Image 1 (cartoon, rainbow, N blue to C red):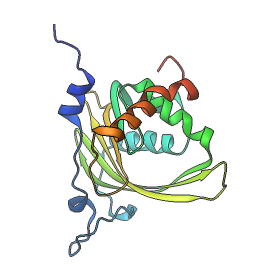
Image 2: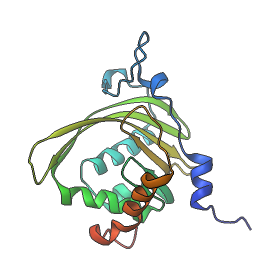
Image 3: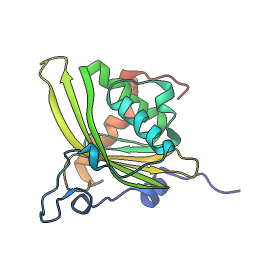
Length: 191
C-alpha cells in the first residue's frame, strides 16, 4: 500500500516554477508584464475553463463549497502572505476575503499556458478594503498544478517576477497565516 503524500513531498514534486519572463514579457523586452490581455489567451479545454472560473469566483469573494471543490483535499496554496497545505486551510484564505474587503472583482484574465497538468494565467483583480473603501488593482501570475483527477493540487499566486523563498521569517509568517486563519474565518468543516 502506498504511503500518503506528505506536504513536503507535494511541495517538492509539484511546486510550479513558471518563468515570468518567458510567459509574460513582450518579444523585445526583459520586463515582466502581468497585465492580462484576454484576446491573447491560449485556447483551453472546457474543463480547464471551468477550473479558471471556480478560481476567479474565489478571488471575487464567492467562498462557496462548490468553488472550493476545485482543489484536491491535499493541496497547497502559496502566495506572498500565506502557505496552506490542505483544502480546509485554503478555504480559510478564501473565506477571509469577504471579511476584509467590501468589494472583490476579477477584471481580466489571460491564459498564457495550458497543458493537461498545468494552467497558468495572468489575473487582474480589484480589491476594495472595508477600512479605506479605496479600490486597489493588482496584477499577478497564477499557476495551477493539476492532479490526475483534474483537481488543483498546487496553487501559486506570484505578485512579482521573483519566485518565493520558503525559508526564514517569511516562511514562518506564511505558515502561521495558513495554519491559523481558519480559526477566524471558520470555513465549513466539510471541506
